Amino acid sequence: MTPPVAELRLLEGFELTFGGRSAVLPISCQRLLAFVALASRPPQRAFVAHRLWPDSTEERAAANLRSTLWRVRRLPVALVESLGTRLRLGAVRLDVDETVRALDEGMRGEVSTARLGHLHLTAELLPDWDDEWVEAERKRYRQFRLHALETMSRRLIGEQRYGNAIEVALAAIATEPLRASARRLLIQTYLAEGNHGEAVREYDGYSSLLRRHLGMEPPRDLALLIGAEHGH
Image (cartoon, rainbow, N blue to C red; front, side, top):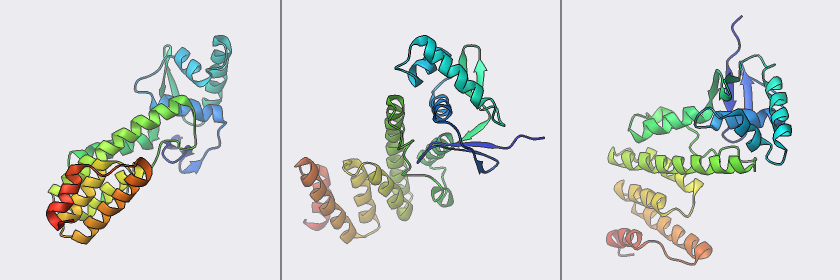
């Protein structure tokens, strides 16, 4: 019998499904799967044990890892495989990988309007988890996504796909509301499509936000962009 397709979702929260049906896992198994899935290369077992159980002794952490691996390996699909002393994710479809590939395609100008509509443009990585290693991965993924979204928006403006450019710029702003480069792209898109009123309103709203939170004004080049067009 063909094993069910396993899908691991880490964006907007943890969910593991087999053939479309959700699986209930202990938190220790969830953390192990997430850690191995997000590792840039197969990590050493000892490193995994230390990171997942940092307050335990080396022996206790290793025992916890063995117990957790035993539980994971009872599932219908080989989710974690051993490579000597290293661990790697098995035959699992990972939403983070799929989104990263789509964002890479978007930066190269290879993403269609239909595909844009299916991307998790504002999804955060495991937002309810506060482990130190998760926070580091969340920050790394957020920075990649922000730069990818801005590159995509810039390319879409050049292709005169203004509706898509606005959608992507708004996704970047939703992630980092005070980010000047994302606001600049949104304003440039409004100006490029001749929507001057929206450009001015966006600038004014951003100015108020900066004053309220940081006590500062927008970058001079952004002010000049609006001023040159509108005498604002």
